[in-house]
Image (spheres, rainbow, N blue to C red):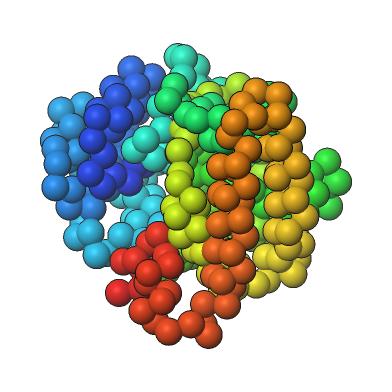
Length: 304
């Protein structure tokens, strides 16, 4: 590993899983780890200190998916070449995950960022399991703006739950947007591809990360995704809309559930209906009363 690497983890009330996440980071990585804690009410900050991490505390009202990660970058050592982002509920698997994602990023000078393979948590339900298997396949890839190996909006897919970025690319692109409801990673990926960089997926860099969202939670999350796509309409204009990828996902999910968990198909249908409604409503958020927008959003603090 030739590069100087810093890991950045935003944390808020991380709970038990953050304790495990921190332990795995410490056991897999000897470099600088920066934890940005949004004034947690639990012992998340103390867990960071107990593991020898650099702690930076901000008011919870100041958290933003883009700006907070930019702040983490600014706190890194001056000689840092690569920034790795993790979320508080992402558990590194094995002993080579960090090494593998760094090696992949270093393998091509045109790569701006690489994201790792996310496996479902042990308690993941069948719907959540399929989502991990669909979005994080067993084969690695590299794509550019003109490549046809990945099509549509999927080309700009990138997940900051476990990802690595070259500092020089971040500086060239202009880092993350400072005020985004979510999808700061997709924003960066799309800008990078437009500017001649490549985005990579390292299937050998493993971590467990999944969510068992209810239909209401799916609605709220996809409402926020709709808000993002409405705000950053240039992404769909340059890479295509989300409907094509959504249809492929639903077909894949139905096939998976028919084989592995047919009793979950009604739940899947309700959840997917909630996603579609949430996304379409989110894209029209400007036409909604502000109190409705807050009720529909998973990230209420964004609107305050």
